[in-house]
Length: 503
Length: 102
Image 1: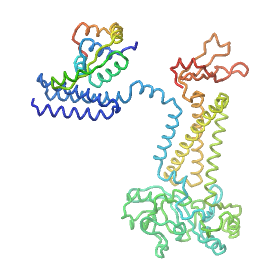
Image 2 (image 1 turned 180 degrees about the vertical axis):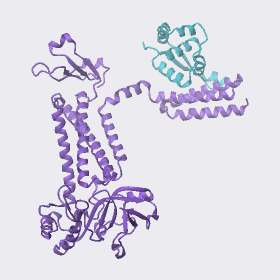
Image 3 (image 1 turned 45 degrees about the vertical axis):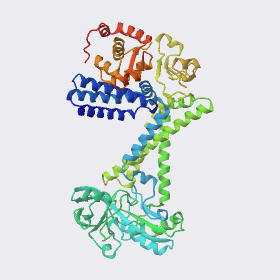
Image 4 (image 1 turned 135 degrees about the horizontal axis):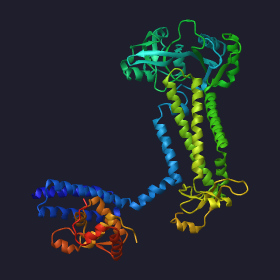
């Protein structure tokens, strides 16, 4: 084996050691590298001098050099420290909050596009605060969509404060395209609706121009359909689709995230014809844009009165007249109320544990602040996770099929939110009870005090002891109001020594 | 006195027997470098072995880098005695029997 091979092997071994040395703390690096380089040097020379430097021994040498990484890691992360970290970190309150935060982050990232946007942002319309929405209660009332469309035209003439109007009527539908058929929600819109909302197609045109406004077979598709059927190809314009068996032509694509006040509509055609509508099959919505200083709330009564006098629907039909502010407020109120209801349900169902949170809380102000602060932070983070998961699920449900109207999707969302809130509150309570009242670490030492002979003394039960020796929570086997009850007992400093002193 | 794992005891015994640097210990004990070196650090930290660098002048005279040598301390000898009672194989090594660990 020649000097060339010797130098090459030595060079590569030293490079491996050099890279591994970056892991070693800087103050130990020099000596560490010196020892390893010396070992490698002697090693190779021994192999050369004993004529044992073969391909297989070279490989073995390299393998041993990789062992320098294990050694370097030992220097960086002392085994004892790592073991302590692995065993103790998961018990700490900061670790739990970090996990909850990370879960929330994962849900936020993984949630379908638009879930968060729909919660935090106004719709992508120009000045949505100037808009007034007139719709019908889908569970009770119905009116021909043409009535709302015509009423909108009449309203703009009667009310000076209304700057523009637009209407749409939506229904479940079936679409067939190059990528197959799918159940969707379609809408007929008045030609000026999109321009009134201040939204323009990202590709092609909409129904604003004179030709398209009269086009009976033109459709504008949503970003979702564009992706599903045409893989976002710019050539989608002019392509044909079958909507409810009728051939239609794509003239435009709406921007991603765009939706009307009824969500999940993915194909838009122009309001035309006077087909006899099927009751409760197609639902109309009228949207009004007010002149800027005008407050939408001031027009609730005039608009309702005007529409009632127009007489296009049965008496007793109730119209919903609302602004976007109302919708946001309503959503927040509903979510808040449901969360409160979930809290009440948990309090009623698990009142023993819930009362323990307060009964065994620390007495001094500092510890009590930490105790309740941690409980609140944990609960809020978990509720946020539940909220985001609910929104994502609801959004997926709405995309899944046309059966979900905004009303029914709202009910499903609220129900899912409730279902998500209950375990969040329950888990928060149970986790809190298993923590030290002083350091908030989970108490991992559990002592069973259920000796049969002692049960008559009424102290049989379980004792959860803080591993840092701060205190113990006594949970009796049988609770009796006068004899024994759950209690938190502070331990004296001698216990700290027993458990290894960790303040 | 810290209780020794078999690997740690084997390394300690190898040093006691006269194999005094990392490569030699690896060869004797048949353990990979990723095990031997961290074990040496741990044993040193526990005070069971002590390391010292070879004199620079001596190494320079032989045109080679200096080596780091390990030796067993009194505590190490005590720990080894206790471990020897527990691990029969160590007794064989102490008597010079060839090990077949791999």
